[in-house]
Amino acid sequence: MSPDYLVSCIITTKNRPQFVIRAVKSVIEQSYRNLEIILVDDSDERGTCDDVLRYDKKIKYVKNEKSSGACYSRNLGISESKGDFIAFLDDDDFWMPRKIELQLKEAVRYPLVGCSYISCTEKSIERVLQLGVINYEDMLYYNYLGSCSFVLAQAAAIKKCRFDENRPAAQDWDMWLSIMQKNRIPQAYNVKEYLVSYNQGVHSRITNTAKRDRALWTLYEKHNQEYTPFLKKMFVLYNFTKSDKWGLRGLEKARLKHKGLCFIIYVLFKRLFGEIVMI
Image (cartoon, rainbow, N blue to C red; front, side, top):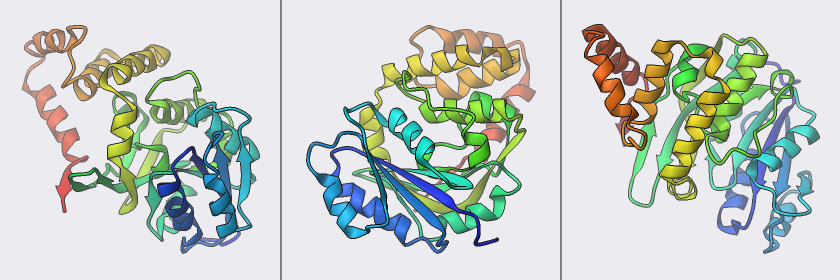
């Protein structure tokens, strides 16, 4: 891997002094050194970023005039970036030291590269093994790339798109779909190593079930021309197994009775690639 590639690392933050320095430090300590760190402050009210900037004076600091949300902040970071590749990091997550190094090895072939990760809550820690090669059709029914903190993207591909600032949830999934669609990218890839510590406890509190369900259906409506009847079934099965607000789970179960065993086997087979392994 050439050391000449510049990687822009965009960190978004607001009012989380207990997390953001740790996140910034995880970027500074990457084994790959040619990095541009952009810290986007969503109008922090506590002076949190003052400590971060004293920690490393090479950080490029941008502050929103008013609080505008994570998606606005990420888009601002994209506009400010100069790298050949772009990676995002939420302030409550942090990267393992070889994240960028290992992802760059695949990023020349795959414009979008994710990774396996460690999911942390107040009560548990899980290692989540992600699916390796991901087809565009796979991404239509499940977000196999996951959170913004997981992904490294070719700058030329990502700059054709923007995060949807009006979307209440699933902004990352919508962004990956848009990138693949607009750039005609047939496949993405996940590095097997566990390269991110993901704060599931914080994220799950931010997005409640009702908001998530609404966001998923608007995502489907936005990209609905891409869905075959089969992919729509997969979308429902993967994303609404615990929620049946619109009666869709019952409808899909009724339809499945007429589709035979092969469909069920296929669903179970695909799920195995995203298995969760307890530490």
